[in-house]
Image (cartoon, rainbow, N blue to C red):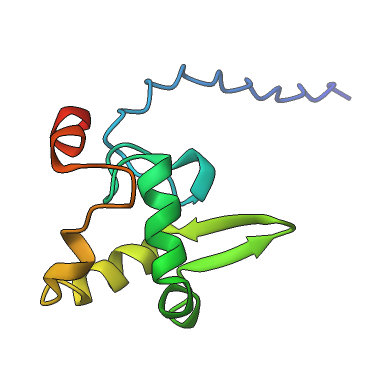
Length: 107
């Protein structure tokens, strides 16, 4: 009786991943680590923005809490933000302590 040959499968080698571009928004992010590509652009402004609109963001599922940290769900946040385009006050605001000159320098 002839011995059967065992078929050995070759392991696939994982390809190295390309670096993630900076303009891609993460699926979730902490308010304290606000990404620069997302309106309003900085952690300080993001914190102020979330404080002003916390109830609305929570209602649409864009803001959740993990322990004491506040977390933004990007998909829901972008949907909420697109529905707010008619409200200039939402997008064009200056947090207390920041004047218009500082706001333009950071952007």
